[in-house]
Length: 142
View (cartoon, rainbow, N blue to C red):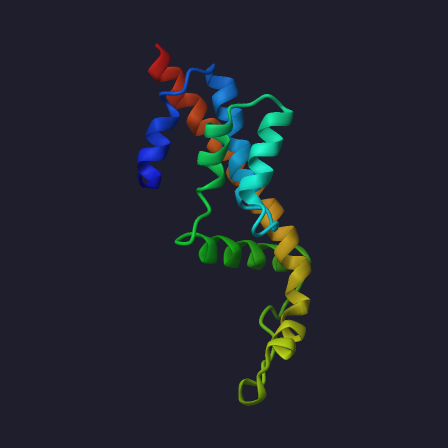
């Protein structure tokens, strides 16, 4: 089942348009958060805590997947860098003497832009996702 099929399945869930949209948009926000590796667990736990539909939340979480994660996080890091006033985003990397620890050290200045940008793009995407799903769900319900 592809992402398109999952999104179409979203509209078969028996929920009010508002709660369906809220669950989906929460999933989008979590999926774009910087908590790599915890998206699914966080989605289920937060949906459970707020009594939202877990399937709708997970559909939103999985908007960020192996095919979309690199462009989403790259864009988010760029946005974060711009918001934090960074003029130079990419660090100089010594490719001839590259080790994993040196690479992590070279990329350390991108951590804060990654976190800020991920939250900002996640929040904006969640808002847009909420509006779209709400509109479609209201049309489908009649």
